[in-house]
Every structure is written in structure tokens, then in C-alpha cells.
Length: 272
Image (cartoon, rainbow, N blue to C red; front, side, top):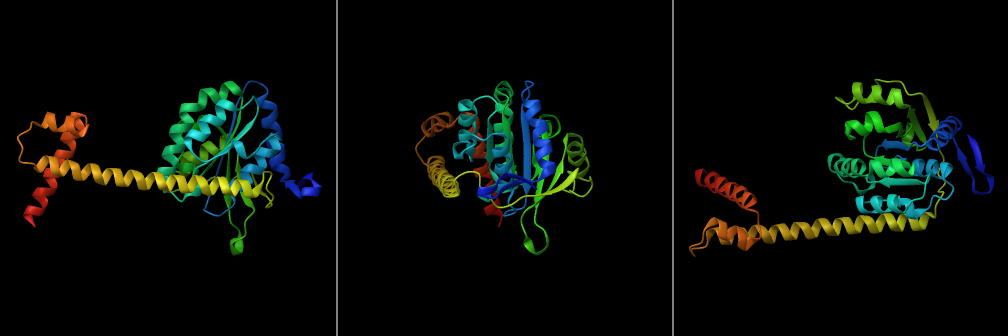
């Protein structure tokens, strides 16, 4: 491993350093550099990614460690040229499909801005195989697959460059198989935090709490809307469906969709 700062115990894998140095030269030739990090929950992929982000950008700080689509967009807008941003949606415990849906939509919408500012983007995700095909094959530069060793030891990763990453996505996607393509090299990382760990963990926690609260609020709103819909549909007051939809504030197509589901459930219970 290559020493960065002996006083802080900061090291980086030598092979990884060489690849990041190549990326650093490339980004100054009007390119962007998007790196993907995936791995099991608790494997240390967020820590690994932030170390690499700090290596290419010594101004990297907790403000550019983001957890939501809005934070990611704002960080890109505020970032200066050649700076690094880490976008981490995996920590929330969401299903892979839900997390990747957010990551894909946000990435695709911001690719032009990322390219214009020549940014380093480190995306931490549940699995590379659920990444949008265009981003996975053509816009990302490399995949760092973080995994646990024997006895659940952290600090290991496999590196796939542009070509091997493409082959892995094509050949391994069907069965989520990481063993079908040999990585360029196996690397390691330590447990040092280039940013204030306490501030990072608080930001991470606050983001999770806010997400859970928003999800809870959305569920409550849905239950209220569903109850109002049922009461209005079952009311004896003569009203057209168009009038009911307007009263509920629903597009007429949405109203009829909900009405069809309501009638289907009534028929189902009537037959039982």
C-alpha cells in the first residue's frame, strides 16, 4: 500500500493509486470520471470510495458526501472543476431495485453537467448489475467491487477497468455473477476516514431518518386518499365520475384506474 499521510495512518492500494493517477490526467483533458462501487451491506464500500475520492481531490469534504437525489444535484451545481462527489444511496437498507431506480434517474439527468465540469463521481450502490445499461457500459470508467474476506473481514475489493466492466455486465447480469470475468487486480483498503467521521455518521443518520419520515408521511397520505376515494365512490349523492375526480383532485385517468381496481376487489370478495 502507498503512504498518503503517515500521521493519520492514511494509505491507498498501489494498483488503485496508479489507476486514479491515470484518471486524474484524463479528467484534465475535458473528460469526466464516474467510478462505481458496489458490495454487500457492511462490506465497507462507502469507506473505500471516500478514500479514493479524497486521493483525487484533497478538498473532498462531507458537503460532497451526499445521500439523496436533491443533495447530489445541488453538489454537482456547486462543485468546481475536477472536484469529487460521492453519491451513496445504498446505506439506507432499501431494496436494490428501489435504490438503483433513484441512482439511475439522478445520474442520467445530471450526466451533461458532470461532463461540463469534468467531475469525479463516486457512486456507491447495492449492485452494479442494476445500474442503467448506458451508464454501466459507456459512461462509467471502472467498477470497484468491495467484498468481505474469511471471517467477515473488511478491506478487500476487486477492480474492473472499462473493458472488463463491460464484459462483466454483459456476461454476469443474468445471474448476478461476479466470477465470470477476472478482475484486473485484487486490492485492499484500511479503515481511515478522510472526512470527519462523526459529522459523516450524523449526516448519514439524519438522511435516513428524514427518508423514513417521508416514506411514513407518504403512506399516511395514501391511506387518507384511499379512504376518501372509497367514501366518495360509495356515496348516494348523485355525482358524475368527472365531478368526483375533480373533487378528489385526481386526473380523470387516475380516477378510472382506481375505480377499476376498487370494482375488481369488490367482485373478488363477492365471489369468496
